[in-house]
Length: 259
Image 1: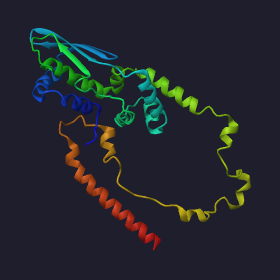
Image 2 (image 1 turned 90 degrees about the horizontal axis):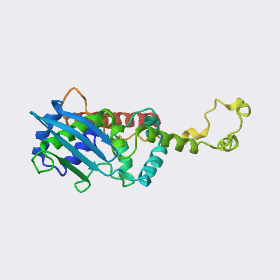
Image 3 (image 1 turned 180 degrees about the vertical axis):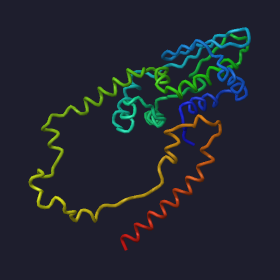
Image 4 (image 1 turned 90 degrees about the vertical axis):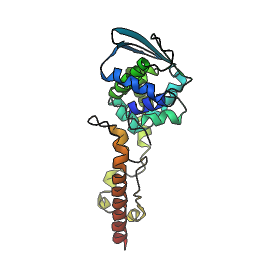
């Protein structure tokens, strides 16, 4: 199943190499507000975790992406209008994760890339305090995905500036170059037949199909804040049935129109 949110993607990556029991023990620290003085920097996160009367220091290291990787990421994002427009408006859609996968730039950590430590006497990683910070970060990354990008090496301002520069360079053609893109005659030469449909209409075709990836609105909106239930498996059969019915109806109407 595609990731529906930044928090899910972050936690799924960590759970792939972390003991689930230890992760569950850490969730309480995040829910009860026991994670303090969190400092996020490129490649490093420091936090304090209160546990009873004691406070322990947690450190997380994950080397940021290099400049060459970020250049490829910006190039890819800038050439896809749906991404660049939403990013420049201050929105970070979860679909952006796919761009990192396409250029083979690891967005989320693996076991040999993440280094976490805690000053508590538990030598296992993650201890419950580290796991608590993991869950706290999941909440913060969901609220502000740009914070995760900063952790990976680029601040929001840096990313916005790079996207704007890329788009400006791509639209720097001269007026003459822009005019050359249009081969139709000027409007005043087409007034007599402007409203005529023409024979080209017969070649227009439509292909109504299931969305890919499935349920894209789940990916865009993320998990709802009013429940801990995973609604995707509950609602997917409903949406699948509606989609099948709609496509069947649309195809039938199209066949009737062309009979």
